[in-house]
Image (tube, rainbow, N blue to C red; front, top):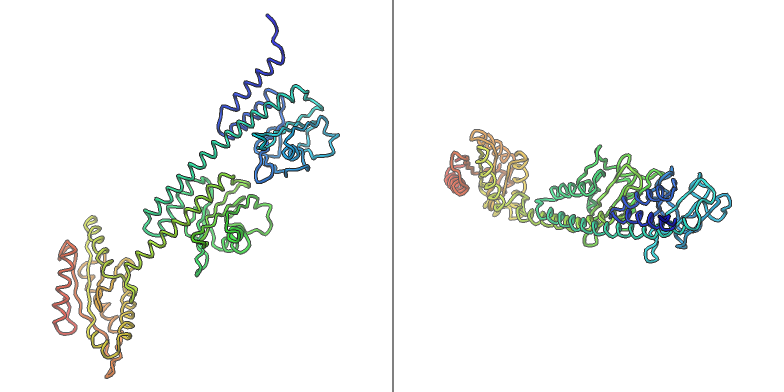
Length: 490
């Protein structure tokens, strides 16, 4: 049998190596396979793969080198930088005689640097070092050059695949944020849902959503960082740190090297890199999405793109939730007193009936009419009457619990909903409110008189188990009491 020619064997080896690196669409796997091929097929134990990132070379993968993550400028300063600049291979058979370019590997005695090109576009540089002088012959350099070309195609495929995945992730997060905005009842709930979405997208990162309303100080709407973030760190960052940079540029800002920045106010404790994407809606900076990680150089180009997309849609969604919340607030409040209006009181009553039935609880209702209010308007004027209504609202509201509901039902009539209060408790509350009203003096021209009211109460479920039945009974009792002498209650 004839012996296989060495060149045929080398081509077979190259084909096998090429199949290995082209079999994956994951960039990390492709880089790992490239290093394996260089080591196992070409016998080079020291190699590094630099990729172009932000107009410089970043050491994305390496073997036999103690300096991962190295960054080099593109240009004549270093050998990889020069190869990226010229797009041509460069072989230094004896490092001791090299005077034009800096050699990064101190243990190397010879270096071969090959550009990773796709359609004359530089993706990076494959640098292979040896502890021997002139170990690579023309055939080996030729095969490695062909291998570098195939590896470039594999990296470009992985990049395109990653880009497709990134766009899918962008669409997914945009849809999820939009759905969260539609489902959220208020801004607090929306920012809580948003925080969960961002946490799922950027696992292992510290996250804070900060707001900067025009008429108020900076605040933290939501945060997932542990330990708890401190507002003063963000205030300092807004003045001279990452927040200040992002807000002034009105665009995403990244600090991937916090340890190297002196007197730089970090937003998160012990963070090595931070990312800030401002929330801008209708030309106004509403706040920012701030991410942090303990590792330096953590945030990749994909992370930045996704964070920017999330911030853009988040700003619009947050604005819509705020407008919707404000619309509901205006529609539910009485413009004069700031109390709930009749519409909202009936909504709250229907909700409380449902809750009380489900949990087998009771609750009380109180309604009151101010006495002599027409006389007050006639004697003191409508403006004085409005001032009095606001004083009544403030005084009575201060006597209630946070979960009690008080509304201006009509004119000088007020209605109160007291969850989980029995009939005896309602009587006690009426006494306190009546005493509070007596503390308000009406300055009639003849002589000041304390304010008084007509009162009526109803109890769920003792009096009725329906909204219509309770309100009909309550209004009927109030009308009956109005016809009775002052001080009567129903």
